[in-house]
Image (cartoon, rainbow, N blue to C red; front, side, top):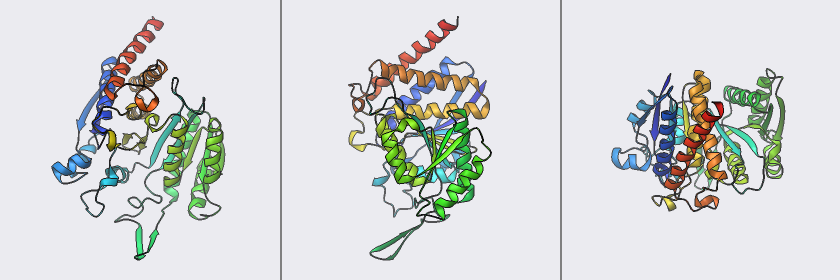
Length: 366
């Protein structure tokens, strides 16, 4: 029997609504598998945390996460934060760096019953998560943007061999378990040193994976190929900002960000986090699509199962994914996908269908 301590942070905007449905699904999964124990611990984060505790990421939250195996984070309304206030940090970026969550794993696949431009997309973009161009992650102290005068800004990008190699290993391990193809996305024809180091590091690690076919693309050319033939791709590794942009592009090909989960991966901690924003315009209206957050939690269970050789967690993850597929194939969808269900109604349908899928599997075995 495996027991996992999971941190739960609801976030801003629609965060509490979609996290609520995610927790309903996790509690159901725990109840359906006697060997799976999930202890959930709620911690403050975001605007509600700032209003109550004076910080968007209190020390008690960081301390609590250090006692957990993984976490679930709702979306954050960071564009509304006062960046001049040191107590209004972007919790997402800070946690990625604090816990060295160096790989951001973002799948994109087509689902039955969901209208999309393509039919057989099944790819994973793995984005470097702790370095790159983003100013909250590119220096040890303070941020890497400087004004030489009132009309000029200089922005730094950080690429290290260590960061590139460990990202490549995550990508290659995943490609080995999937369709044995890895694509390296870069811009080394112009960014010769930074992207050159990333490219070389990925190929050096790739030499230890003779079973994986490796190709590479300049990021602009890859963006074109992605919208022309996304079915051609399996696992993609790239730097931070390129991956952020390309993963949203990939989500647009399969029905939108409501279907795009994400998992922030480190060596000792995992953080499940939907790739979309907090949608404050529909906050509290029970309209949000919870699938991305639910599938992010599903990914969390998958990675916990691999790291702990835990068949119960793996079976639970598979059941959740099968339940989402079946729910969508039957036409149960929220408004962003062309349906008419509320957030809570979708979650309720999903719960019942997961139970049904589990019963059907058990009957088929017996």
